[in-house]
Length: 336
Picture 1 (cartoon, one colour):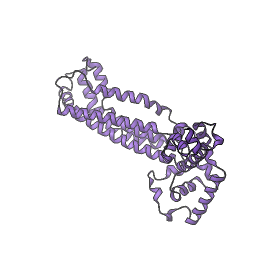
Picture 2 (cartoon, one colour):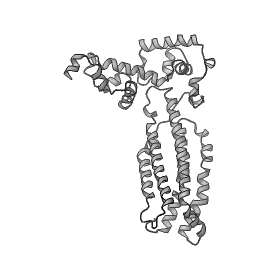
Picture 3 (cartoon, rainbow, N blue to C red):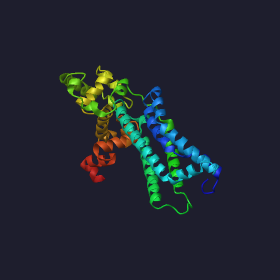
Picture 4 (cartoon, helix red, strand yellow):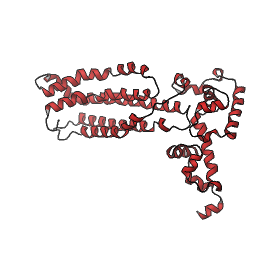
């Protein structure tokens, strides 16, 4: 529209495309919150945080759009807005970056809560969302750098709008990763996790606030470890916090406290520790030599190749093949 001086199209583009960062920022944040919170708790605060977008739309987008379609209307005001366009763009980008950071923190909190309740992330894995937020941040920072450059070196004639490249990058990024958001499963968490303080302070709460005494905790720990060794519930890929709690006659809330405060871990890491150990035993056992690494991972309780590789690398510092090579018997190493 701007390259071909199409006034009406430019006016429409500004009306619906200008200031979109003020809309996108809160939407990203509340999308992440909507995955676990009830809708009734989100609508009002979401609309309140869209006030900057509506203010921008009324004070900037509408008059600027009208001035483009009818140059004699809002002439001076439209020119004023054009003169401060780089500054308003920086303000919008700063707003979007702030909300992107808040959304990222919300993703981290949600992941932490999920790991209190499940042993395999599966459809509740939000890695794609973090990638989306990283990408948005990089693109918006690049756009801000372009605005700073134009403030210091104003273009004499706009032959090609570099901001168009930024817009195409943003659209492309959302098209690829935004699709994940449309199919993201609702994250179902136990009520006590939703009610619990969203930060990690519960991990450092004093023992006087514990649901049981230190002696009780020690007894329960022995009971829990015995169940893990004898029944090997971690081999069930779908085992959840409530399932393991039932095996030692505890509520999921009490088991979560036992893991968090007394064993200094969470359910996800606790279960996957045993799964990694099970894989390590099988991968050097001749009995399982006919199975692939992936088959052994499934036998150990992992649900996907991606999660297995990530967890195994984090816990051992090695890939499965590197681990097998390092721990193979001398004869096998000689053959290798």
